[in-house]
Image (cartoon, rainbow, N blue to C red; front, side, top):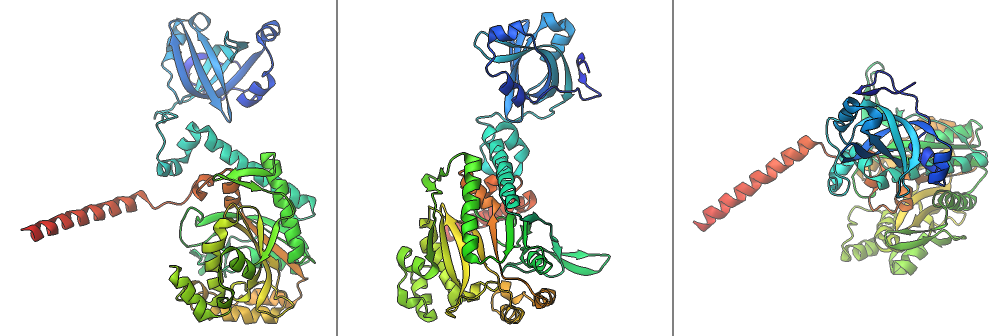
Length: 500
């Protein structure tokens, strides 16, 4: 299809010979003489990013994907009317162009165009690249603009796609099959978290957005699918921070006849291979600190990590009253926490920030691990591990509890707990029924993709690696600002009354 010498919107999208990135790569080593000796005519498309006029000629840059190419536009090539129409185009407009490749005197790869078509008009101007889009909240709320003007942001999400491909490839190579489990569930479970609730009108039942796929994936083990994984979206109606978003992505997988030790070996290999595939190196910088994926990774029990890294006195670890007092002296809220949750609070405060190299924390208290198999020592601990690196917790795994009676007992204990999350828990009778049909010994693991991406892209906030993070509505912000303003006015009045 030949492009028209026009400035009107094209009724048909012209055939494009190649992406701008492919053209730049293909002709990267072609010099001026090579391009001149073997004329190459191409049809390309992209968004106008710059325009520089020089009388009867002009230069523009169009971008697309991760690349850009310069356009050389001459009045003698287009004619007066069409050239004048080209001059009316704005930065941000999408154009299709046709012409011959060349290099300028400065060596820049350039398309000398002899026809063009306006493909889409930008009615609003794009932010200026370096100064027009610096407010982080605006960047997150209007991600389309953030992507349009910031090359480094587009690279983050290319890296995310590359990471998912690498993870899938490794799982597939080990015989895992990818599955899909329900996002809307009649009963939520698999994690201690508060769900989002919705209502199905036809069935007249409440449903819950999944907080974790765990119990459905383990039903598949009962059914004979021995190695399964799911790249899933989970939803938890909880707080928002630099490390938490209510909607997030997990890679969760289960393998029959593995235990937590075998799973740690696999996770170590999986994440090392993934990092090297994405970054090209096992070593990278995260927030100013070097992170090395050199194997084997450090393994340390939960209790030893608290004592040796967090300087928690050993004598308080089994004494709920003494541990609570020790934490409260250090401004760690522990009033309503059981002993296991106090361990977790201490780990988060005193140990986690110091774990830069990949580290497995093992042997968790049973009261914070309701689906993990107990250790053979009967010491109140379970065969569970978490992975920490760069100061972030990114994954959780364990030998799976497959005793239906023990699982029922733990679920009943959870449902009787004192916290909000625990009080809303119910025994999943269908899951217990599945276990009663027999589930093979197995191990499972889940890695948070968003936190993994924080590490791989050196991002300080989880919002940097999520295309559309959750925010308070503009209306709520406006109301909050109004309330703050009115309170400020009231304070001024009170101060005036006090003065008088």
